[in-house]
Image 1: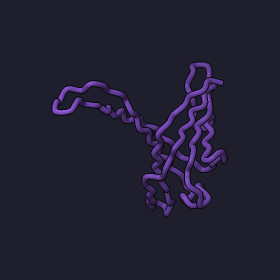
Image 2: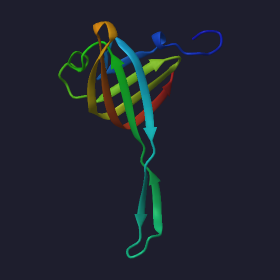
Image 3: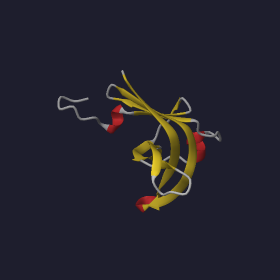
Amino acid sequence: MDDFGFLRGNEITVKINGNEVGGVISAVCKTENNLIRIKEFLTDKPVFSVEAPKYTIELKTRRSPDEILGGQAVSSVELAGGGKTVEYTSCSVAKTNAAVLPENIVEYSVVISADIRSVEND
């Protein structure tokens, strides 16, 4: 981290299933908060509400998803850097995409859905 507290991309380590992944251009993590409402029978008023967040991680890379994932199912994604480690578990691959950019550069995108997120300060 520099003097102003900014975190740079080259200071972040991305791991999938515990294995470090190289060639990642960008990682975008999103949280979607869902509210589960339990209602009483024959009424619209909720008796109990609980938040059930869903997490998505989009990785853009120059390497194909087959190379990154190694033919395995995704069980965890970990982003570490700047004194913090964020781990996503109960994961699954939601979508993959490949785009050919100018000058014949291929950019791959992998969207991973996760149910659990944990944050640990180093």
